[in-house]
Amino acid sequence: MQTSEGKAVNSESRELLTFTLGKEEYGIDILKVQEIRGYDAVTTIANSPDFIKGVINLRGIIVPIIDMRIKFNLDNVTYNELTVVIILNVAKRVMGMVVDGVSDVIALSADQLKPAPEFSSSMDAQYITGLGTVDDRMIIVIDIEKLMTSRDMDLVEAVAA
Image (cartoon, rainbow, N blue to C red; front, top):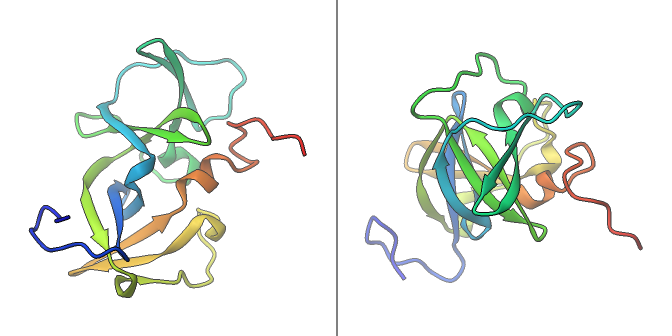
């Protein structure tokens, strides 16, 4: 298997879709991504949290749309031609997340991924699996399934024990 740069990918590497939110670059497991779409109008749902923009009908499936910029308390949330929705398939549910833009798909080897330091940020550090370095870029790797199924997102019903 090879990346777009033509480098061989070893079995220890992780393929990530990278995207931007504000000035930061994030990475999520490419296997959780179903598709990438431009931002379209959504149907708003009354009494939903601010970060849930509403829902769209995606080929007969009602998909909740989460604006990650609002969820992560970023300033100046604007919608333009670069704003995209990443359609995810997590916890057997389809959902979309609004981001500022999609960068590319990268492969991170184990030596390029470092544990996340303990710090206070707008994103709870429990969802950060590490920090990846590619050339001069720092990528915050997040566990998108853990984030989207968290209690504060309230998107997936709790499974009874």
